[in-house]
Length: 181
Image (tube, rainbow, N blue to C red; front, side, top):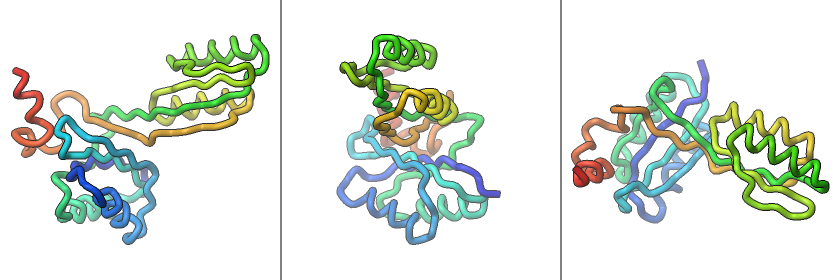
């Protein structure tokens, strides 16, 4: 059964690696729902969070093939029960009166968002959350008129003791925690 799956991938932080990984998905006919990248505490390593819609056998194939790629350090299919997933969404909303601005500010407060820009015509909000939260905010703000919307794509980490790869704890991004103790 096809469902949204989150892959966490550690790769070399060098030119062309993101393109190489994206081409892998395209070449194999997999649609990327969300793709986020950022350096880890080791600036030579980038963590990719990739969300795809696929069944279990295709997901297993993705993980196995990604693991064979030279710039890939490790790949893990994240278990939803042990994963924290968040996305940053910026909403620029029409707000031409003080009553409308106040109402939008109250909505931002309810969803623990921030007002990050104010003008006579608009308010820009920052909301961080999973897709249920960001979609709920979007639905409410549509009534005011969303002028622009920008999303970061989902990022994810496993909760507690779970990490991307138990074997990499002694090297790469996991050295950082050990050197502080």
